[in-house]
Image 1 (cartoon, rainbow, N blue to C red):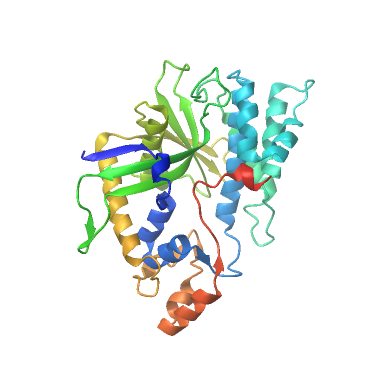
Image 2: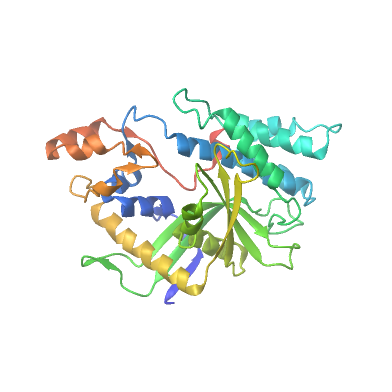
Length: 360
């Protein structure tokens, strides 16, 4: 491949940030992508995105489980104490740590630690959504914890002797992708360099620490974890990006990921609510991923800040079982769309947003 991928140096951190969410949004519908993730606009009173909110709350619980493993099974409590507040914020971290008691069993402490992270996530029930109630979230997260193998996948740490060295929990990815090939969409040439970012749920050793290959963990929540759900990760560009980010961060070739699905609410059949799906990435998968990135980038740059003239892909007006909030915008004439943009609220998306700092 005529592609170079490396960690973003300070001299390039002025570049615009792109991530899988932003690029896939413009691929799903250019109008949606440039409005929501280019101009950072949203419709006032559009309602809660319950699936996304519930998923984010569960991710807090999953991160808490990894931190509990880091400080207990992996025997690196100082690393956990340093990085935990940076993910959760100092106040939340202190309240999580306060739930662990010396007189409790280790499993009870793990449950309490995890449930405190979930309970302080900011998620709250919606009376119109019975499936994503907090009690259902708790049940799913407890089932996830019950299936968690505490010793199978040690958390990656950059340096076991330095608690401030990076750890493989909620890992920010910030890298430059350079291509030696021209990329075009309908004759529109795009720059051949992009700053690609994201946040990886987990980076672990696939066996004993330091002597095993590394493996990416990607958490997903969903209403159904069926064959279609499983098969989607054979091709997922998001997963490919995480393996490349892990390779850049660790300095090792990372080819494998495990997508861990947690069903919400849990199914009636006991034991089927947590699914582990393997995903392997070879060089040709990486080539297809970079081709897609530059194709989506060309589409994004072409229509960025011009949602009125951007194509409107009506097949995507309904996503995640809810209508797109921009349907009223797309229905208007040009003057009506201009007026609606002025009435929209700012809703900034930043894949490198540090959740710990926000909760201080």
